[in-house]
Image (cartoon, rainbow, N blue to C red):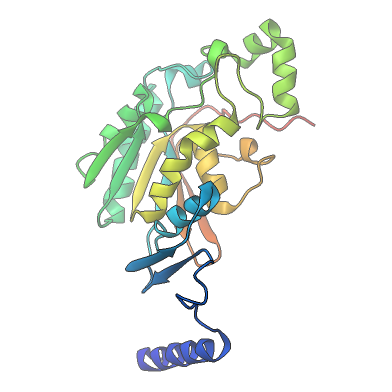
Length: 272
């Protein structure tokens, strides 16, 4: 189909819509709640919107992005805590983690992205990773809300330590990982609420790289790929891997690029 044929086909489709649908009337439909999105978001008409849910719908519609773009997700490079299997903390990158940060620079230099932005967690390991790419980006921002899930009193423990010191807590986490909240810490449910502003902002941005942590990136990945909450805490987000998300009209294309740099495996299977 040529460009002119595509245009003609689209205009015919609009005419068919006009034959089938009746527009809202400002006087007749005065008591109804609605929002008109004009010219794919160039302007909006919001009428009689009340309450939290309706307001959130308006907020979402005013931030959707229709132009082609990609969202890149990457965990920080391997950290010293990753190497010894400890939860959370704020340790720096390992030698392999620093190698990954260098390879990440090469990867995005070859991508040649317009209006490229980097959003990073404020944790040392993420900031170290993102800082290698700062010369490629239009803007680099460090977001507190991109920090890893707060493990509370379990910060710095290995899974073995966690299980031996707090066996009841460990069992509860395995039973319902999404709702389980670390003592004095967070749950995945808390994390989803914390990340809502980030996700809404991602909807309206162009090309963005998010450098963050396993739990955080699981939440973002689950949103764009429409995963349910039971599967969310077990999505695979390995170290030294770039996940490229390309939103489509009714889906999201997911590509994973694994770098040939050694890293520990931090994935823990869902208990049977």
